[in-house]
Image (cartoon, rainbow, N blue to C red; front, side, top):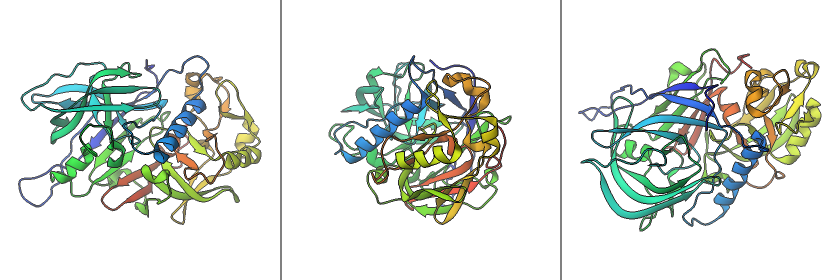
Amino acid sequence: MFPSKALLSLCILATAASASPVKRESKASLSFATRFKQLDKGQTIADIDRARASSLKASGHAKRDGTVSITNAVVTYTASVGVGSPATQYNLLIDTGSSNTWLGADTAYSPTSSSSDTGNTVSVSYGSGSFSGEEYTDTVTLGDGLVIKKQSIGVSSSAQGFQGVDGILGIGPVDLTQGTVSSTDSVPTVTDNLYSQGTISTESIGIYFAPAAGDDSTGELSFGGPDSSKTTSDVAYVPLTSTSPASYYWGIDQSITYGSQTILDSTAGIVDTGTTLVLIASDAFQKYQEATGAKADSATGLLKITSAQYSKLQDLNFNIGGTDYPLTANAQIFPRSLNTQIGGDANSIYLIVADIGTESGQGLDFIDGYSFLERYYSVYDTTNSQFGIAKTANTDATSN
């Protein structure tokens, strides 16, 4: 299902509990791969991201009814996660846009002495995929010692759309689990349990990505707070938005300017690792297209520019909490080494900004996806209801 090209290895820095009340920092490594899913004939990367955006909006507006309709992304992150005692390794997708952890899509679940069937059923829809089955609690091991006791996991008896992987490690807000498990309002996520079991002192996740086309294709996910060794500035925090439906996810308020031109006034949207591109409201997208002179490309669904237009690209500034976080000209283009992966021409230049499909004022007017997050360090802080962002060595990189 996944091409072998453009794999991105990541490792996890985790905070482990000590025997004393004083927390001590301990590293637990976990190998990740970032993969570009092969597109179906007639699909474009922009179409898939828009479908995900539409599903996120619909799920946020709707009452919790046992489904979280989120379309699978083009870029996915996989990790080998241990479940049971002794642990069996399962290859799970990592998703900040959903919160249930489940397995069994490819490799069958192997109960051990730490496994307990709760008798509850579990069912989640992801738009282009779904699973249903039974809820168990079990020991979950991330890396070399980050252990979670009695973690709720779904064990699938039926799963569609997850060929080549075993399930999902959900690290989104806990509210997204509401209605997914019978006889239960919501279930703690892996991050919730790391915090409640005293392994980490703050329910916070830091994520570092390197650009997929970079020479140093490594990154890190850190439980318990940010890793300062991956940043080149202090982490700046902003409160999560209160505007629905963005507030159901990792939602923030921001405005966007292209050079000195405002193309999107301050509004609510989300930060989402499961979206590949940067999606902005239709009216803002039209302004961006006119300002850059780009033309729509039917093969990729992206905007396409000439070399002369590229040389004139200005910074695309994301104003978050009063500070501009720019995407340079190089950061605004899709990695040219991967053009053929998305049905494009190897020598063409495509932009990573796409139309979200609705006008601004909908309560979810942008998605800062992977193409933005690979240039900045991001922090998802549940304890303090805030989002953090910092510069990295990749912010101004010319890897594309």
